Image 1 (cartoon, each protein chain N blue to C red):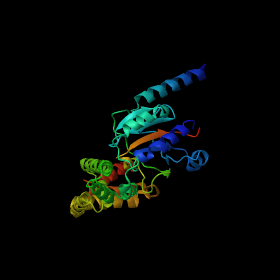
Image 2 (image 1 turned 120 degrees about the horizontal axis):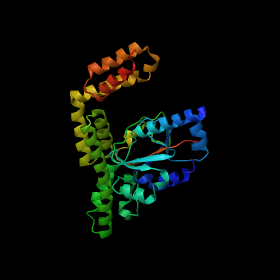
Image 3 (image 1 turned 180 degrees about the vertical axis):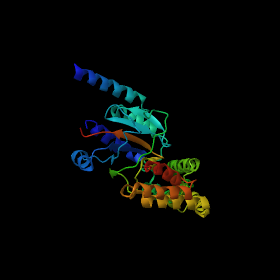
Image 4 (image 1 turned 135 degrees about the vertical axis):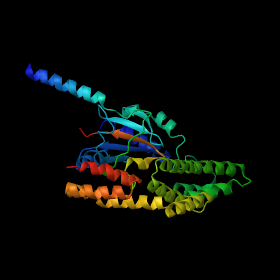
Length: 64
Length: 257
């Protein structure tokens, strides 16, 4: 019961935390970020801002 | 990983039309390389970066689409990004390939356009419009309209660099644009603008600040916090009104003991 209780609290905390984060939504300016490493990307392109002038689709993915 | 074929298809269809995919993972490079690049033979852009703190998401995969000015125009699951939506988004974006067969007389113009020699392509397109042949004329006008999209794109980039006061970015854009439009009036105009910019003290400061910050950026982690802070504060003090100077001031705060 104790385990369940702390699990519920952790879950609740996570939910409150997640909803307080400000996600990038349509209408917002997309924040820049630098690439630590890249594949299939034009030489000299090292950050997102260099895609200005194009439509860019940022996809967050993982192998798992 | 189930979404890979869909992304690959969008890339195949639209990468020539001003649409780019940046698939981001924070996993280690070896994993990304073996499980995606090699195993799935993807040809779209993939990067390693940790964007979790800026692009919040409650599930993976998730995607955001930014327009030519960097504004978010879509947020959601990648499978909801359809070919029709990309078609619509890219309709005013500068293409890098000519999407239909043009009259033979424009062969050189098309070749120049696809090689990124836009000044030359523009000259060929203008010459074609003086032709008596109606088809050549129409196709010349079409090629010119494609070149004009690049003019608009560069103008937009320059405007946004000016607005944010990022003179380094402005200089780089002017350099790239004048090189691509070499041999045309537009190219000369940008070249003159670049020369004027390079003469200004504000530009000199901006580039110097950026250079100095770049020189120490990789070494910061290995320095004692106090000396990292001092070095950053020096740049911030010397060039307070430049983007790199402001960034140095921000970074310096991290090294407060």
